[in-house]
Length: 308
Image (tube, rainbow, N blue to C red; front, side):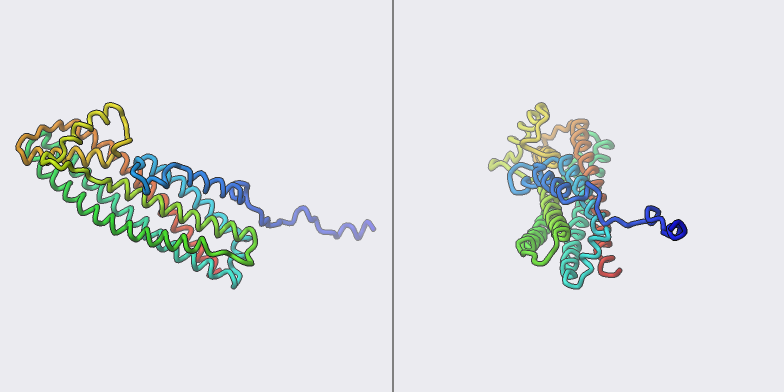
């Protein structure tokens, strides 16, 4: 008996691959992350008159990127790859791949818009530093205003694209899944809901960038706004205007004054406002870059499931 027992393999030394997921990737954890993002106070901003600030939106992008990182780990797990690799589930992978193209396009467009804003802000900052309150700065202010009008047209087109993506995503979410195990159901739900959150965040970003211009009916154009802005600055409030809106309103006011030849520019004040806006734009740029990389990695993970 002793001799026979000596040939029994040491089972404890045999490596065993576990199909279980870390606690942060369990369904309850993913659901908690999704619910936190939904109640973040950002997603409804694009549907109301309240505009989220740049810091709020950039934080939302960072948190969403973290969620996509977790989803990527789930997609790479043997359990998920095996489930999605079955022929009857290939359509779910193809659906997710198609959705990823739309999200990458939307994120790429948002990055382009942010880059254009960044360049225009830098140009105006440079002009103000060189010329100060000189009347020749009016040309640069007019150039910024013209850019904002063109940007708003591009934003309107992007919003229409996002609306179509949203309708498509809502349609897919309403389609019931039959014959799918609990794990795969969690994966599909996480992908669909994270995509819906991404679309809403892109809408909030575009809303932030295109805060409507409120001209008064009188010929003075921006007299009411110019009176309100010092109050807003003094109270450090973002209830009426976000960072983009404050710069828009002040520059439109100055443009109207230039046309009446009574412009008085406080270059340091304008530079301070542009600095605040520039910081928000840089934060948004970083958040979008991070999210874009996560979306690419998710797409690669999905492609790897189809091409093992």
